[in-house]
Image 1 (cartoon, rainbow, N blue to C red):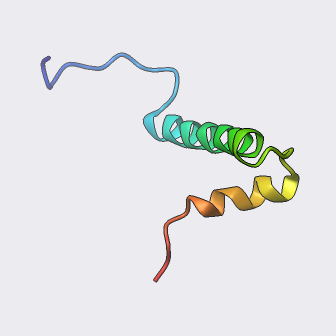
Image 2 (tube, rainbow, N blue to C red; image 1 turned 90 degrees about the vertical axis):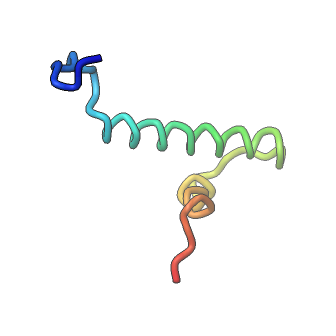
Length: 59
């Protein structure tokens, strides 16, 4: 591939695609964890606290 060649435009910019993929995977992981690991229904509290389990620790 020629480095100077223009790339065709995609449906989403790269950053937006990464953010959307992270959000969808986090929500999917929450529902699957609640359903198959803990066998409970997801709650709004769990929905808002679950992303903190994937956040990197702060020093």
